Image (cartoon, rainbow, N blue to C red):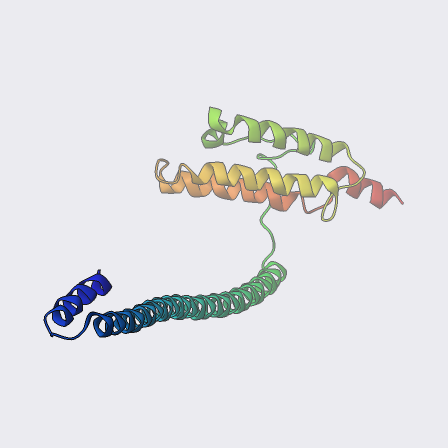
Length: 223
């Protein structure tokens, strides 16, 4: 469009200048050639401009991608550092808890040595292994635990192996712990004195299982 407009303007100009037609034709041909070269140069310039713009966009996209890559790497590094920190904190917490458990175990062991374990009275547990349960623990919610402990103490009365370290003692510890957990669910329901008495009764059964049964003591005395 620019080339045609310029050529038309020049034709009009030379057409009114009074020069010969031969000269005018030569001049027009020369102008056409110059204008054609100019058009080629304009087109090449436009192409270079488009290429430069495309390169600019490409560099901009690359810069943005680089920024995101750097942020991503930084976030990953922070996450790894945070994870390592949390792992160290968790490890330190576990070690501290283990030390506390060991200290508590030593304290409990010392307490047991210093304080004799309370055991059931004869009216609560007889030589045959029969448990005489208090009314609090005769309720239906304790049936399973009662049945299990009745069976274990009946076995203990007949067994040749009982006391600390025996399978019977270990089973009694599990059963009494279960019963204490069941009892704890009624801590706000039972009167305090009744709750504490029932709790001590179960604990005494657990303590009793740590000692040899009367049968085992009798067998040992005969040897």
